[in-house]
Length: 126
Image 1 (cartoon, rainbow, N blue to C red):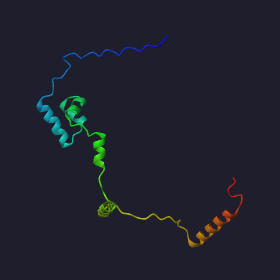
Image 2: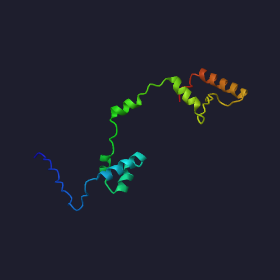
Image 3: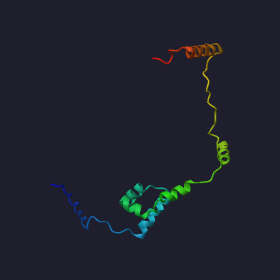
Image 4: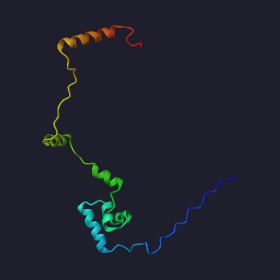
């Protein structure tokens, strides 16, 4: 017997006593003002005692993906980046040292060992 899908549950509307009245212009202005100051949507919802969804509907929508991508595609030359990094005082460039800190006689011993290892035929066998 084929399996049939259950019908979706019927959503009941909450009683009218639990619904809040529509946003007033004053509340909209307060939400927008708090957003402009830099308060997060979650904190605005706590302060105004409205749901986060209601606050999100009042706030301006975030830019679409293509708009955000267009904002990121700035024409910056390599020279501009180099000049900007040169002006930053907390960023210091130091070249990494790629040599081992060995004394000259230790370095000669290491090179002799490496050349002897290359000559051995069983060096690759484990």
